[in-house]
Image (cartoon, rainbow, N blue to C red; front, side, top):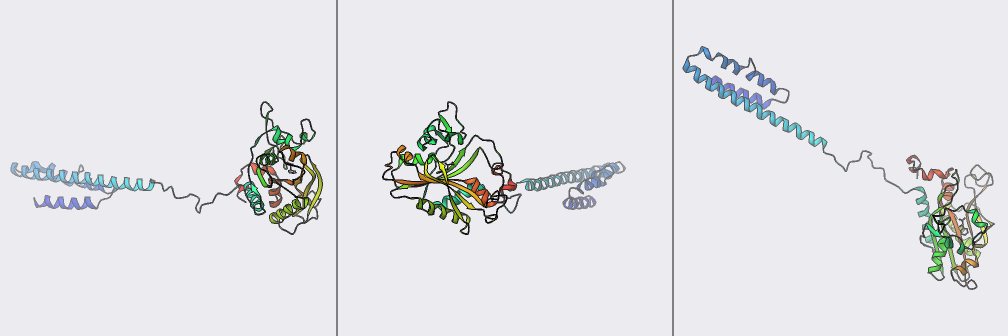
Length: 339
Ligand code: PHE
């Protein structure tokens, strides 16, 4: 009797200390084919009927206790395993695989626009945007480019079905929108995307960006234009570069000029970037043509103004020494991450 009580105690301790690997051994030790309890139950026949009954009863009770002890232990162990597993599988979404986090950044074209806009704002310009889909009037007619004028051929236009609307070929229609709505004085810049139907190559893209700028008031002269542009160029590129104004032609300005900046790669000596001229074309500009002022019902006797258009990609390429405009549109992170 005592033996069986002791056996239960021992077995209980063994079960308690068992782990997943050893619990089965405990079962075999007591309940297996040759297990201690199995042996006891097998040997019952050698006892007297009375003893047989008593020992049989006790042994069966012990068997049940040990069996259910093992069963409970097994369930506990399984639960612990499952808890550990779910704990491991629980995802912490705040954790980054790429720690430390790499911050997102603005596209180099956007960075340039932001930089340019803030310089012009510091010079008193207000920044506004215009539509990318324009009518013939805004993109050409009001800018002194009449129908069938050869100047239209210079800009290969994307027309929209029906030929009534088109994708703006420059930001100059922004001048017309602003002046139609506001009487002088106006001093505005219009950054935006423009479209030209031309094949793409290292220096051409059918989509690119410009910043238009203009000021109209009484007594505005070419000196004001030069002052603003030189100030912008110095602030954007640095003040150690020479700048030159070269006579040019645009339908909507008279007189017109193109501004060249001394090549900042070779400092004017001549290199691949400036095609050995020592100068880099940076922008077009001029005094607003009286016909443009008339188109928006401004008194062209009383008011004068200047306007300029800067190619954003060009300026960005020059600033960072990028030699292919198409890099801006490929979204290759190896390129974009450098800015
Ligand atoms: N719109 C002209 C272009 O796209 C640039 C320009 C703007 C020239 C304003 C003069 C004045 O080439």
